Image (cartoon, rainbow, N blue to C red; front, side, top):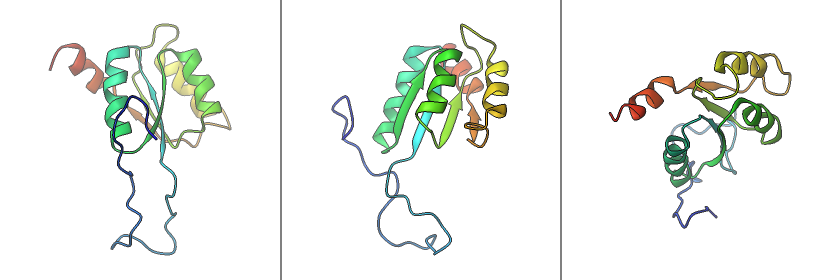
Length: 121
């Protein structure tokens, strides 16, 4: 069940499709995103949209929280804005990349998206 009274749809259909085969992992549980960014309203906007699509979303608004949640939440993917209030974002990325518990998690940089949203585009 999703928080905030949002109707959620499954992110991955349960039926057969052309892409399904024996080698492909079966997604019976939602994928977990860790969304990292200092702008709380932008993080919230992205969070709501991902949750509507059926994903589980953890959020962090600073580097310390991001590193803690990357280890504790075991996300499948991390989305990241490198402008963070407490530490250089690139330093945080280096920590994620060298930590054995987080080094294999794919990371998507959202710097341009956050920049456009900050400027009102």
